[in-house]
Image (cartoon, rainbow, N blue to C red; front, top):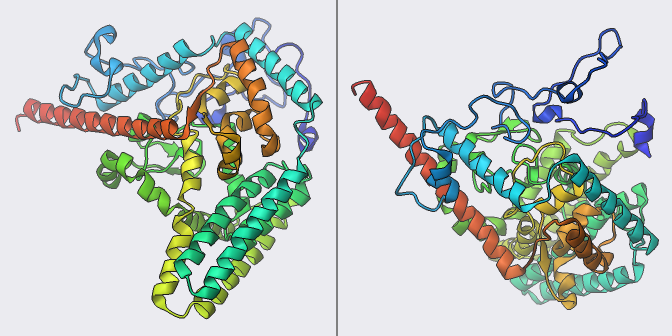
Length: 490
């Protein structure tokens, strides 16, 4: 284990989680290498002091951030219409400033989660962790971390069929049909890349990395290194507006009112501006959801090349060679897809355009599958004492489908289970589902399970809700501006 190299000591007694520095936590500094250890350490000594609002870019969570007058409202909280619903734009409550409205929304979301999920007290969360570890031991004992290689033989037959149909259609001059089969081929291959990226095939770092690079870069034109760089963060800070790149899609999408604050993304290291373009697009985001996802693969090309050109891949250690092999794979992809097929094989501009657009647009279901499991789930921060399994189950949903349709979802329909056990091979996730459901019933954590249609409706509903909140915010800003003009005599 690489982490063992960095161990410098051992904690005696119970470990108390700290607020991470990236979320505003401040730690006491060492003095000449010696850490201050007062005998009467209380909670304020054991935990870092959260930063003030001027130190961080986000609205602090009312659960673990201390901020005076975090909710500054004219109306009484019990009678505040915004806390009960954000569906009406016609009646806008009066606030002293825009941040008061956003703070009220944050508090509402946190209160809803606190009421719905187990208590955050240490005893309750320790029991959740204990039973989660027992579940993990049971899964290992039953061999559910062992890869079912016969299942990949079936996958290989499906891949071969789709690729041959692409070549046959290309030979017959059916360029749109050929592009369709290629898109289906890419769609299926991504699931194996996902498995390899989590070391869920051979459980060997080098072997699974090679599988991922060959499929993603050489065949698909996408960087598996970029995906791991992005996806590992997603698994650590799932659905955190400031930190999870998988939900940071301004100006096109905002799944939380928090994005209306122009947050700073810790992953992209830039401000996600709620600017004029975002204000123009977000009211229509529910209608643009599927059209934008249809062109999602083009954005993945950009992100892949940005990652490789900027040299964000590891430069030392066991992964030093990844970047160079990936760049080789990218040029190989450009050769076979761009030169051999698009330029040499397809003779007409219309045929090339049809092949290009269809092959990329039919991969849209993959982007819908990726967003479906998280976009409508909680984005609230409940503080450092929330256990890992509760956090994952609160921010992730599973999709219900019959076993014969598993090939279409490729394991992504079991995202909640996958987030609990990321290295479990996907062909074992269905067998694990019943055990996870029993675990959730035992500890009192709701297990979000929706059909594909109902889950999609939930996502669209969340997008519509944030659009309404944006409209209310705009009215608040307009009302406050008009009030200021009156006070100044304009």
